Image 1 (tube, rainbow, N blue to C red):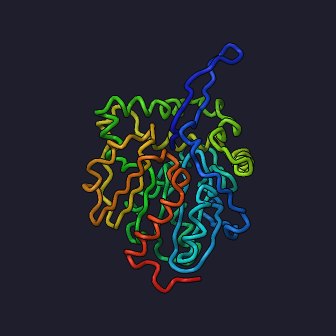
Image 2: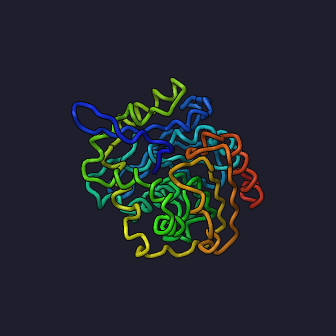
Image 3: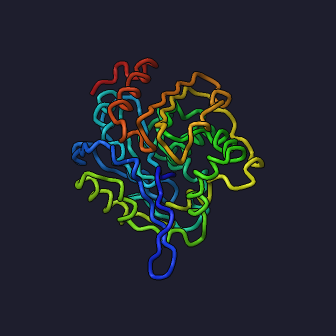
Length: 317
């Protein structure tokens, strides 16, 4: 959904072109896992849209959903450890990489994105799953927990405050409105024309990982990526947006505090929108892409929390 730092404008051929700098991500781990060691590729059918995934391990189903600009490979540091206890399924959201790329704003409404997660769970013959989401994947995960409570076991959210908190901050906090200026740019009709695959990979230091991301973004739909914003991101007047209902499951939130687009103030009062237990872990040295900025800490936090819930018992490979 967001990029931590953006170089707002530069002049090129007499017109303004937007470039997006991810300078706070330069501390990202350079660990570059071999894709073939991360699992098997497959597809689930969601209506007329194919949803690509990579899966590894056995045990309780754990579905991982990436954000913007990203794809399933963002979970490369978490998959090996989690797959020792769970069947991990890292999906490409529609519009991205090898998943289907339907045209039209309506095809990216939250209801359709929730349907994709449901289709993945049913594809594996399961009635419910642990759902992990980052950024736009976090937004989809929150929405899935609200719309399909019978299908979610436990919920993990990385760097995406509950939409009620984000909307409150947009309505009342000038700093959050300034931090969200990029989203209003993304909602403009011609915004996709200012994106390039190369620009979206600017933040990746490791040459092998960067090459993988470059190819994934070349396969992606820029219009589809930005339709997430156009169809679902809050618009002014922010205080008139209806609140989301609370979720009825245990929730773990991990938030990198150096995220300059999703400010930590939006985390306040999250407990009002969670009916069960809420665990909040903040990482002061991590930015928006917390699963990569602080990969080992995120992985260990996930495993510790899930073990505390007893979800990994008897699920060894």
